[in-house]
Image (cartoon, rainbow, N blue to C red; front, side, top):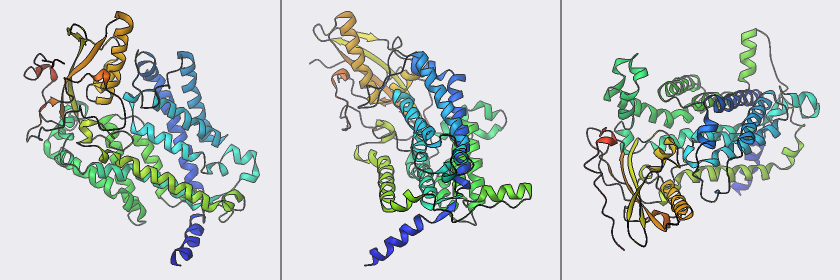
Length: 478
């Protein structure tokens, strides 16, 4: 009985009118940032170096059929992504532009598993939500062209859906930092001394005490960001700290649009009419919307319960997927099983040293293999510490040797890896034929468990000096 009386109140509250102004601000700024991101792919040469130059691409399980378009068409694809971002900013064909951004950036995300970025995943999610959130109803060409769409308010659920999606990276960022490495100041104790561009300005920047301070500060910010943003009195101060945090990340790690994207999106936690009030204060004029004007959205009124069910299902997925690494044994930062799509950001420093060998199945002759003709340097680095990428490339390499040299071979790897300053240890069993392994979502038993403890003083020696580990392999005979 209590649930029955509560449900109508929840539904009514979810569809109460809220000012559209903050949604319009986020729509416009996200569009500008995505336009910038599209331009960056051209300026930085990313289209060539990541998608066109490599002979081989790492793919996600089940999505091996997604391949890069020919150069002219791929170039056009990124041009159209820029056009769609501009249309989103202007509010012109808004929902169509959001749909193209969602589909187009998802295609880019799936093209190369080794180039996975959390901010690219967030772009796909938010642009997908913008297909359904009615941000086009004010300050847009759509509303000007079609007056019946015009409204200064949106249902409250439209705001809360985007707020919740932005909250998720903060919440899971805090959860992922609850591990011994981060609470011992790693990997920041390794990274900060290498940031010479900052140490030239701040000489003590590489000191261990500062790395510890920043590690705990990062954890507390992720943990408290959402609660403090929801608290009206603390909100301005919390937002100020968040801005400083993201600007520091941008200066330290040079991680592209992600800090600016999060700063703009986090403004959603302010009162929904804050842009109107800001404009009014700057220009000293009253700026108000037609609050309560919701009759222009009859489809929302008719399907309230269905919309809330869809919202609940969406966030059930968003809250479940990041925990899937708990289904796998071992440390997720070591095995990489369940690492992606989990908001595990900037948590580990992995230094690998790898050698690949082909063993002729008939003669048992062992030959060293150089993967560089097939992979770019950045692909080679990622593959060296990601077992799934290693299996995928081994299968491709065995097929290439069979096709070009008529050799039936096993592919073995000798991979030593240092995680967050630990002494290097084997990552995969060198006696396993990686080319014969089946890629699946199941745990891979040939991944060697992490046994090296975290030392008091981080191991920071370059792989070229690891001679004590890289002894000639002695592969087991069948």
